[in-house]
Length: 118
Image (cartoon, rainbow, N blue to C red; front, side, top):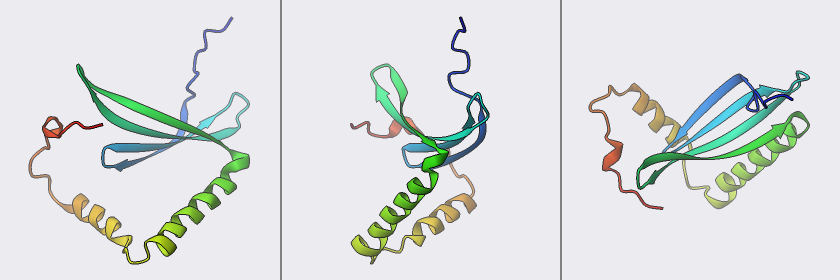
């Protein structure tokens, strides 16, 4: 009997999105029959009495659902941008990210100084 080796299949491609205290991972993986699927993982760093741990939530997305998923995501984001918050310049967030990436690192941040709230 096999020891469930490789339950978490090797990643073919991976993209990371840092978003404040959360990080999102978009990973392409292969099945045993060389079919491909996507996992979307949200990872949040949490504080516990004895230190930090990472809380993770994962979505598995299969090829037959790619187009429906992307369409629903785009429709939902566009609804927020165009109907609920038309006054917000969402491109400002891209500019802020670019500005931060172009700034020299002054002092390393100390994550321990943050308040820990749930």
